[in-house]
Image (cartoon, rainbow, N blue to C red; front, side, top):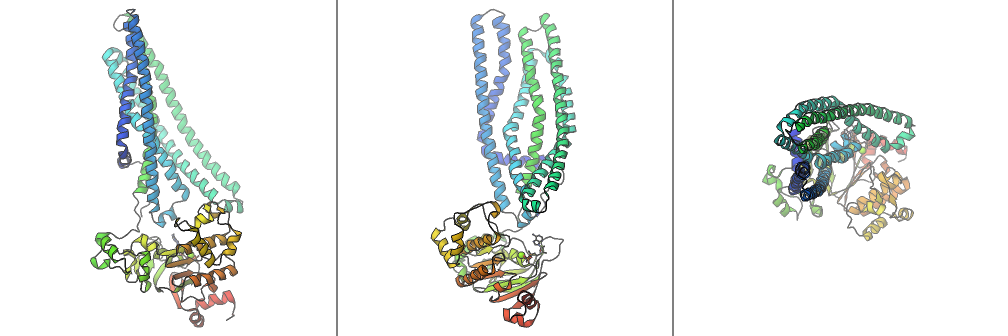
Length: 615
Ligand SMILES: Nc1ncnc2c1ncn2[C@@H]1O[C@H](COP(=O)(O)OP(=O)(O)OP(=O)(O)O)[C@@H](O)[C@H]1O
Ligand SMILES: [Mg+2]
């Protein structure tokens, strides 16, 4: 998978524009309506000075009271209509902006969920949530504040110029040299301030990432008395950001002051030349006043221009980051239909055959799994997490027989969890093959493959909500009775007398013990009732007495299930049908408990360390 880091701050405007356009497309009718209101409001805004000019030059000059009254009424009406059109346009734009950002958030979230585990291993949570929240907020700004406003400002700028030129070409020419100067100043300031703005953006995301990281690991921060150190680092980042922000803002203030200076200068020029020409009778007083009013309309777009540029830059760099996420393709995907030969479409499970023929993808169906005749076979599997790193699984071959208990033991970091990671296709293996009966794993539909397995992972996660919510998290339609039944069968009545099913679990299960978390996770997997149950150190944190009760209950109610148990505490797996000892990515020993003990190899060494020489 390609890295989604932006190597340079250079924005690919064309590509990002295409994404933004595709997001805006569903709302093109709304955009068209907003655009219509925009044209109306711009036209009305340009009309007002013309009416004023008429009032001065015609109604007042000719002392025509009815005309004066009529024109004042028209002026008032135009102002009201302008406000209504503006209001209607803004409301439309806000709705469009909200719709687009909601779509975008949904799209990004759904897409992120489809990405490889690898992606999440490399990108911290803080960064990902910031992407979704902050970057979509920039897109909102673009669609509500800038996209159409740029068009409005350009229309206004040129429209006003044309009207001015029509009324007095000479006076318009007086103003003309002003604009190259303004453009030059704008260009200079945005060029000078751009690096600081880029720096501010980078530091803002760094600070939010740092905050998330520190608050997430608050126990370690406090446990190691890192509060002061963490605060100091944050202070440094904030100061750096402050300096960059100050420089950028200082330049912006300077920019506005320069432009503000130009405004009275141009007003003086219009008054000077215009006043002179009025006295000479070349232009009317009305035209002079009209020009003065239009001057504001000329400066307004100029003021806003730098703001527009900054929003466009910010939103396009956000759009680029979003586009990068959306164009990431998971390396683990279902096999393409067309690439499957007809012989691959045989489904091992009765009842699923028909469906398999239609989709052309061999699919394992949960209710058809009873048809799994043999089991899961690893054949010379090699796996590494990164291209340039060492092999983590080395030539692993083993057979997990249907309906039996298969145990995996071995040293820390030996590759036990990795074995599960490749079986469930969280990560790909590079060499060798895994078969479910005779079907290569990579040709099995991923969703239906995973739905075969109940999984209790080593790093458990409970969702915020009640214990009951957590037990039902995979399927909210599970009736409560089924849950009570499972509690009963797992002999957990005592545990749940202490913990009400209504007990609220806070984020990351911070208000419950690790062993308790394990018990809930185990029960959650049991309730799902899948044909395969994988327990990766699932009872490592519960007390030995509870562990024995759970193991016994598990064995009793999982008679028809295939259990894959990973454990360091060998007492849990003594009775397994097959025990595999894995060390440094290789399977070194295999057999049943007694055999392995007799063999006197690594397993027996581990066993003796745990239990002494008692046999
Ligand atoms: N996402 C990952 N990216 C890169 N390397 C990884 C990743 N996950 C695990 N590893 C490495 O792969 C090796 C095997 O890890 P694995 O989690 O399979 O060990 P394990 O046998 O389950 O150990 P433990 O008993 O501690 O749970 C370790 O050296 C580990 O550092
Ligand atoms: Mg592990």
